[in-house]
Image 1 (tube, rainbow, N blue to C red):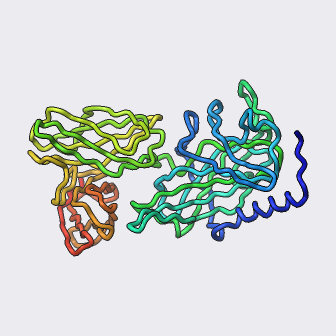
Image 2: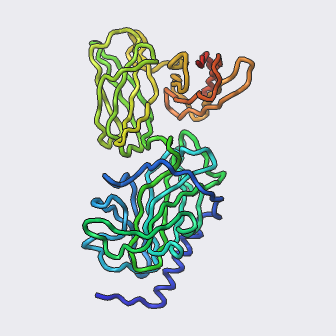
Image 3: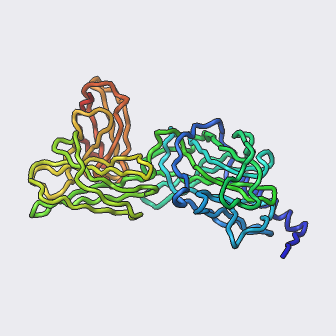
Length: 400
């Protein structure tokens, strides 16, 4: 049945779109970005993204993951096959990611298909999610404001080469890449970020969202290791447990063991199953000191390591009140083992002559903290831990 829309309905919809464009704050500064790492290509799944329905007076508009084409679109047979209403707004929201960019900046890139990149618009919003002792705090920390697709990309005519062409998918394709600069984008161990991309479309044609990026090639895997612990039983079986968040596109976890904390060998593999807690048993382990770490492997071969933990001698677990660093000497990344810490704890790396070279904020409740030291010149340093309740510990750090 053909639908007829009143002038009043169109005016209400236009007002709704304007409200989306001006929400929350003035647009942040935006520049050309660096988007060389695609963290979600949607070829094998929705990657944890979702598209809430946007209800206007004349339409219900949202993206849907098209499993056969490996992208998000508003064409959904047999439910949506006729020309969509317009003007319309539809948005897509990412799962939480750590920010791989420096504090105050966030790169966002995505592939699109729209009918008219000169007239159609989009908006990017960065939403911080911070865990505090009082609960979770969510805030919109940056917004691009409404932007033309053509202003931030080089559109080219779209040609549908699929075995079954999508109807009403006409126009242009391109890749938007921009950097949002805003002092409210603050990186911290307790903060992750969701990214919302909204399309404002002005014609009766379908659109596509695909190949999402948040930064350069060395952007980290979405998985985030919260903790890794080990317990030794009376019969010398070691049980390892680790918990993760943001498990996206992870294929498996490889458990590795070392006698010295520097050279590791694989001892087993656990398939990723979308859980938050994983476990692995390593039998017949002697009472000598032993080190473990876990390597997450993505479906495209990229990988990321957990912290390193140590079972000392005949110790029954990996917890320790003693401040320790693995490996030693260290080259680029260290794991700092310590007692469980409060939210006010902090660490500093200090040169021999007393200069503070690096500040580290450990996550509340953790017993192991990872940090990079590749910016330090080879030599001897002091790592100081202040636990937030008046106590402090120091340990030597040797960089090679």
